Image 1: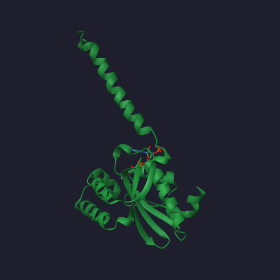
Image 2: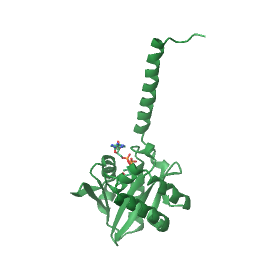
Image 3: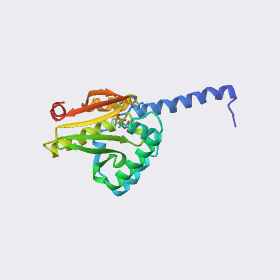
Length: 194
Ligand SMILES: CC(C)(COP(=O)(O)OP(=O)(O)OC[C@H]1O[C@@H](n2cnc3c(N)ncnc32)[C@H](O)[C@@H]1OP(=O)(O)O)[C@@H](O)C(=O)NCCC(=O)NCCS
């Protein structure tokens, strides 16, 4: 059997790792098809799935818009987990190819105002347009099922550039920036027009 000498084998290792890196980068760059993403009511099993996402502190920090891990953050995670369990109707599951990959939370602020939050809990899918498609579909559902609803709000941390980019793609505009957070809104008229 012919065995490659080390000096011949070494460049092959480099080519192999280059190939792997290039492919994983390409996978990140591939945007998903709109038809593959749905927003649905939360099933009982989804509750446990999305609670698990919050055990990842990087996800939780981004979801709550904080750069430090603190007792306050841990308390907020625990409250949110309870809320998912007991107020299931305030959450929607984001599905990609019928598998749950994240969730949207809804807060009713007034009869014509709603605040929302979003998490894609499967990190390998970040940057592939799932958040944008899910938000567009969900907001479309919200505006068509409730004619009184005028404005949707959300906020995110300044450092969360992909969240901000995602929200801008949906049509959200910034109305305030304070304490490391960006506050954004989307009007019914601009969403329909956009
Ligand atoms: C924020 C979040 C919901 C966005 O969903 P998403 O599916 O990743 O968003 P999209 O792919 O639709 O848009 C993200 C955009 O940011 C860009 N981006 C910038 N930096 C990025 C990064 N580090 N990782 C991924 N995308 C990044 C993407 O390329 C994409 O823009 P493009 O379409 O012009 O290429 C998702 O990333 C997430 O759940 N993150 C963790 C929790 C969180 O931050 N929630 C929001 C709290 S307000």
